[in-house]
Image (tube, rainbow, N blue to C red):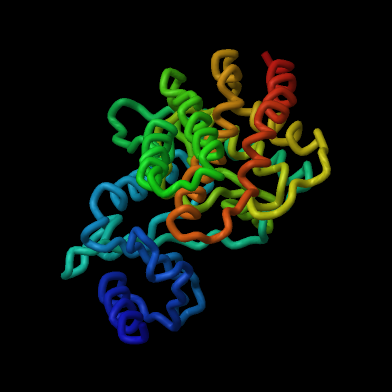
Length: 324
């Protein structure tokens, strides 16, 4: 690890003509993607975020993130900004074929769950969905869409089917059926989506602006996927914590902020329950498969989110329809 960090510091200093004071990994090096995210502090005190994409996983992923961030900068949309090396390229290719992407670090405090802050986060999301890239702009499809995630999760279940004991057979079949019941939402209009929009992926700046961070996986997709995940995420501080006491003000605040910039059509609202539940059932299917394979206890936070989809969607729909 020390040697790898030292080599990475050398690469950064050579590519960006800077002097690095410290480089701190922000994710585990054994991450399945092989990607490394670091916080880089320069000798002058400035901090940046560095992403390293190994040669095997570089290419489309790195290019997609760079294209998205460059487009957002052109639109003056609040997000991380790419730090370009002297040759002005957004990405730096290392001798071994890996790619580096360095961006500014959005400074601020964690986004809280107060209606005022959630209103600002909703407005930030609505503003994103209102952007209209021209046909000449090449941006990726969002990665975590049901059309990709549902078949993958079903494959994880199928892989362990023969190992499922009789006592868990009904649960296995229930999860598999629920997975296949989710609408892919692919017939809905596509806008630019963040694809992982929840308070934990945003920062409240000193100016009171809520800025989304972590744009990997962002791209074209149905707006309801972002909206659904944000709404259900406002019902608990994190996926692993118990839900908050019900408070319609949180959902209402998100929607009021969102509708300042963008509105969901009735056809999109019809599929809001599936947009809310899809991430939960994907997680549930994969965690069940891992439980069968490893024998460890199965986490169950996802079941609350899955079960709450209809209730949250109904509350949200009434709020959205007041703007139609």
